[in-house]
Length: 262
Image 1 (cartoon, one colour):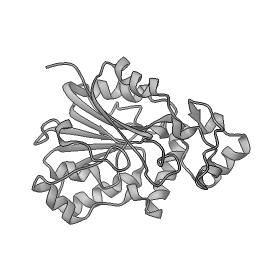
Image 2: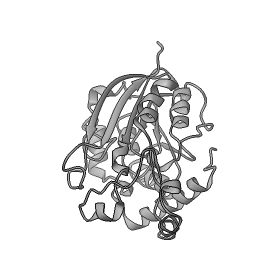
Image 3: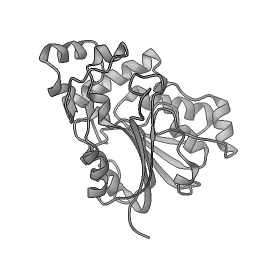
Image 4: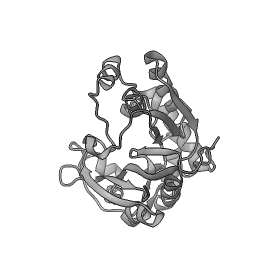
């Protein structure tokens, strides 16, 4: 079993476990009506805040192995399982993984849960999956290129990677004014809570139990997929409409990539 392997992963595991307790929107299991609709073929899920992934982006799912990469929480994985896929989920947070199992137990679904770090997929063999679904979550690891390399390894030739990530422009701004609706540039990109914040602010963030975040460059997010061997075939942008930056631009990206092969 892959295990969180650094202090950041351990801190963020505890932070996301706490967010389950607080009822964060990405930790709330879907209801029975959503699963019933998915069994009828009526379903949609998101990689980014609001925009559903186009159905034509997916390969055939019936009976196929799918990896939800750092995407537990009782939402996407159960829907894909109800749609007919054989779903495995790897996530850093035991409480998030438990949310998937809540739905699986309630609905008679089979979902394999693995606690681990998205940068280390050693729990899985080469060429294991037809689809990897990786919603916005790599902002919680300090380096993203290992995520792409591992995803490429465990995806079978001809398989599809669907990934969502944050445009690093989100990390330019001073957080406290941002939360009041003001866009005041403070940070440079790439961004890291560990190195971009003064020590006192970082310690206060940790003491509040907030997850540590990282703003990766587009060169690492998109170029990293290409360097890992993927071929990009589609993309779209999305936004939080109610956020200060979202009023002006889309700051989330979804990509569709394939592993060359058959």
